[in-house]
Image 1 (cartoon, rainbow, N blue to C red):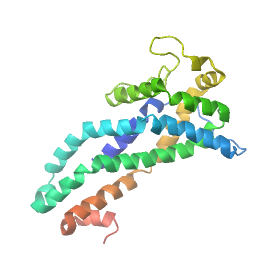
Image 2: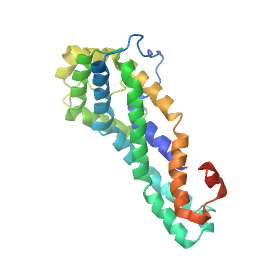
Image 3: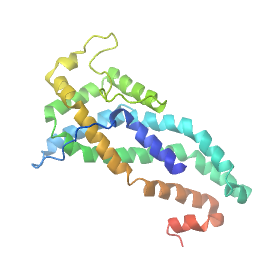
Image 4: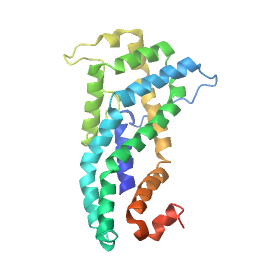
Length: 241
């Protein structure tokens, strides 16, 4: 259940951008992009994922929703009820650190996603377009829109396949915003579905290898809490035989 919580938090953090699309996203271009072009793509992803608060908000929302059930599951487990009271207390203390541990792990995971996605993004947008889109992503209006999408997605609302980044073309008053009329805004509108596909593919690739990292993180803390009562199968999984 620990692993399931981490997987859900990470996937939902990216849910507004990870709708499955029919088109196939391009691979990294044959000619290597310049260092400056890669940096511009990385800056956009930094703005979109981290400075917007998307990853942190999804992780926090998932912790709020999932931790009570997780705690109840631990309290009712045969293993918990078989260890000493002192080790039970240590286990619960470890459990209380889970949201912070998972947030750190998820942040690292999406750092990997951004690193993998950046070269592919350069095939779709110029360095100047990427820089201007990053500025737009940092506006309070766009940040609010992205966080609202995460909140609704965590709450169970389906993602909009036609607007993976929300209805960013219009402001709160319904009028078309100035950015949508710029060359960079028009480039973003042209490429947003393909960008969402790139993000989805790289997220799925990185997430496919997260289970061992989650198990190591959880089991090491659990074994430390249980000391000599740590089950043999967990010791074995950690290579502590």
